[in-house]
Length: 185
Image 1 (cartoon, helix red, strand yellow):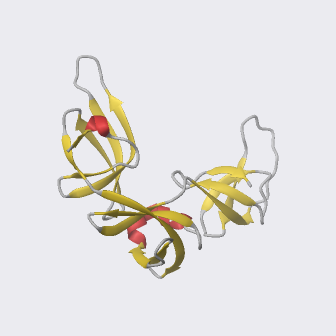
Image 2 (tube, helix red, strand yellow):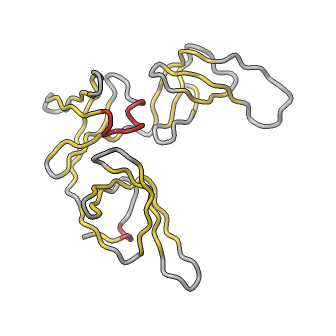
Image 3 (tube, helix red, strand yellow):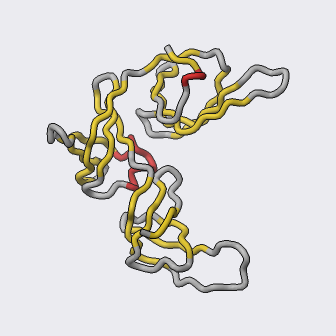
């Protein structure tokens, strides 16, 4: 059993019949009140993002999690195909299991396959991914004090906001957790 004091980002636990992975958590304590832990979690079975609050004394069932190195091979319709780097066995996941993170997958990308309760359930993506810009709006400098951005589309079809100096053909680093531009590569 684990408690809210054991929470950390990436922890997978079971709350009732739901298997949840912690994306973000925060302890709150107002004066004269009991501590509350607010978490943003992803349901591992459905891929949906949920926000929950727990009292500090709640207990949850720990899930036996094993992680292995995988490589993303290709997407075929709604199926994503991965290969175990050590055994060369192929596994398949539906896109719905990854939710919004599926749009960051690039062929031959190294990911971490997550097994729990003996079954291949999901993958963890690297924090940042390098993508090519396929189209970008022309950038015009104006009378502005703040950072100026424009829309750009990557080779996987993701639309992100980038600085004005980014042009078509540039490679950019994108944060897979937020979907935001990090830097030009």
